[in-house]
Length: 246
Length: 303
Ligand SMILES: Nc1ncnc2c1ncn2[C@@H]1O[C@H](COP(=O)(O)OP(=O)(O)OP(=O)(O)O)[C@@H](O)[C@H]1O
Ligand SMILES: [Mg+2]
Figure 1 (cartoon, chains in turn green, orange):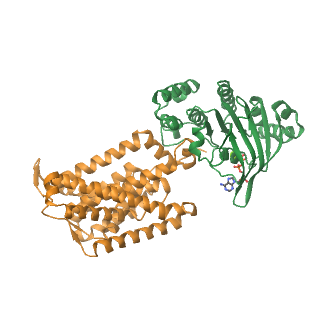
Figure 2: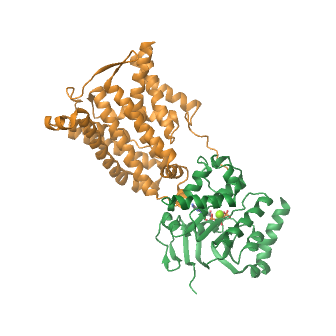
C-alpha cells in the first residue's frame, strides 16, 4: 500500500545544533498520528520542515509520489498540507474574517467555495461567526486556537499539521479542542498531531511516535504506546504529575 | 483667516508629497524591517526622468496629446522606469543580505542611495535643472474665495486618489490582507500560501513608482530640481513615517499631511528659516513621547 505522507530519514540542523537526526515516519490516509516528546525534542521542527519553513539537510519527504523537499511553503499548502503552528499565531491586527480568508489564500479565486468553507468553519466554531468583524487579537486564548484551526482548515487540506493545540488552555477548552480534532478527522482529513498532553493525544490518535532529542525512540499504535512502560513513566505519569502540581 | 487657510492648503500640498514618499518607506519597513535609504533617491530619479520626457516632448507630441496628456505620459514613464530600478536595487543590494541581519542591510541601503544619487549627477549633471515653465501652465483659480493654482489643485486631487487607492488595496482586498499578514508574521503568512517573493515584488514596484510620480509633481510645483533633493524629501518623509507609526500605511499618509501642514504654518508664522527645525523637533518629540507614532499599534501579542 502506498503511504500518504512519508518522511524518510530526515536530518535538520540549526547552525551546529542537530534538531532532527534520521527521523522517519508516515501517515496513512484518514489516520490521526501523534508525535510526543519533551520540550526541545524537535516536534515543532518536524512540522516546520514538512511545511517547508525549515530546510532539510538530508533525507526526503513524499506526499504520495511527489517529493516536497525543494518546495517552498506556499506550494506545500497548495498540495493539501495545512499547518496550524505552535502558539496559534493568529494575525492579531486582522479581523477574524480576514484571518479565515487568508487561510483560503491558495484558492482565493473561488469565492463561492470560500464562502462555503467559511460557513462550515462557523458551524464548527460558532463563536467565530459572532465575532467575525473583530480583530483576532481580542479573542481569548481558546478562541484564538479555534481560529487557528479554522484558518488551517480553510484551504481544504488533506493533511492537517497541529502543533500543541492544547497549549495553555483550560481543561474544558482542551476537551473541546480534542472533540473538534476527532470531528475534523471524521470528515476525512488526516492529522499529524504534536502534543505534550500525551494522554489526550493517545486518546484520539491511531498511532504515535516518541521523539527524544531529535530521534524517534518509540513508535506503535496508541494502545501499544499507552501500555509501554517508558511512555507511561515519561509522558503519562509525567503529565499526571504535572496536573497534580498545578 | 483667509491666509491661514491658504497656508494650510499649501501645507497639504507638500504634505501629500511627503505622504506619497512615506508610503514607500513604510511598506518596505513593514515587510522587511529595513529602512530603505535609497527611497528618497527613487523620488529624485523619477523627477529627472519626468523632466527629460517633458523637455524632449516635441511640439508634435504635445499637440497630439495635449499638455496634460504629456504630463501623464511623463509620470507614467517615470513610474515604470523607477519601478524597474527599484526591482534591480532589491535584487542587487537587499536580497543577497536579508539573512545577515539589519545592520548590513542599512549599510547596503546607504550604498544604494549613494550609487543612485551619483548616477543621476553623472547623467544629468550636478547643476539644478528646471522643468519647462512654458509647458506647464500655472493658471490661478479662485475657489470659495481662496487662491489656489490649477496645478496645485490637480496635485492635491491626484495625491488623494493615489492614497485612497492604495488604502483600498491594502485594507480591503485579500492581497492587501496578505501583505499585512506578511508584515506581522512572515512564516505564518507563508503557511497560508502567501508567496513572500510576490509581496516583495509588489512593494518594490509600487513604492518606487509612487516616489517617481511624486518626483514629477514636485518638479512641476517647484520647477527646480537637484540631484541631492532626495535626501531632504526622504528625511521629511521618513519623519512622517515615524510620526504616523512606521509600518502603518494610513499612518504614513496622515503623518505626511500633518508634517507638511505644520511645516508651512511654522514657516509662515514663526520663522521660515527655522521650518526644518520644527520638523525635526516634531520627530524628537514623537520619539520621546509616543515612539509607536500616531496610529502605531501597541505591540500586544497573546502568548
Ligand atoms: N530557529 C532556531 N534556531 C536555533 N535553534 C533552534 C531554532 N528552533 C529550534 N531550535 C532548537 O532545536 C531544538 C528543537 O526545537 P523544537 O522547537 O523543534 O522543539 P519542540 O519539541 O517543538 O519543543 P516544545 O515542546 O518546547 O515546543 C531545540 O533544541 C531548540 O532549541
Ligand atoms: Mg514546539
